[in-house]
Length: 283
View 1 (spheres, rainbow, N blue to C red):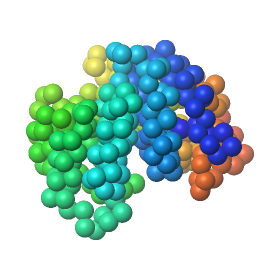
View 2 (view 1 turned 135 degrees about the vertical axis):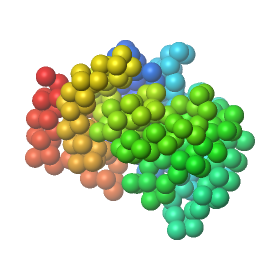
View 3 (view 1 turned 45 degrees about the vertical axis):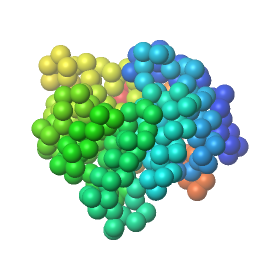
View 4 (view 1 turned 90 degrees about the horizontal axis):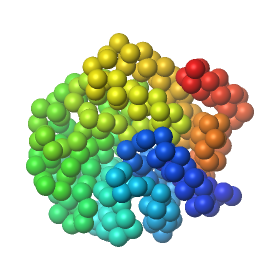
């Protein structure tokens, strides 16, 4: 879920209408304070207010997942405890990255184990080396998955082998979620049970349909739908970034708005390009 802003401040009243519409579409939950939520650009108190604003609009049979990753283990634990107190059902924990040259597998194991020990709610690992420069290898994921409070992972790789390797080393109770729309079909075929996708903020019904087609074994139809989704997914994330995603939301009747500085607003020609590709994906 992107964090809406109005005049540079968090637009809390915009959160409810967006979340209610996503829930009405049938999504299994919502992630607040993730990468596309501009979590890195929010103060802690702002992030807490975002969680609080979303919670009343996520039904009890859906999941409110809050991103709590920080650079230090201590700060991450504190954020996880605050998120739990505000009603988050589970927390998503990215890898620390500022000192990435010194973030070894052993350091990551210690970091995540300490968070899992201390968090009042379950944690999901978040593997996004394209952003962080730090990768969680499959063998480490397998070791962390043995912790009773580590319940899943958002895996952004589009490499099917990564999903196969993970699925082979984690227990059945551990949920692998595809985290990149262009690789969603591949991930779902190779061990993922669901997905956390930015494009679901714009085209939730199509994302749900993709998951359903794979579960039903209708792979030709699923692949065709993946091919419809991929161009808009690439445009609103890889191509135009968070500003593009928010613009696509605005064009689809959600409340996206502008990103927070230093991220720049979308240029008009980029908006026109998104309008074109969104129209193609929707028809």
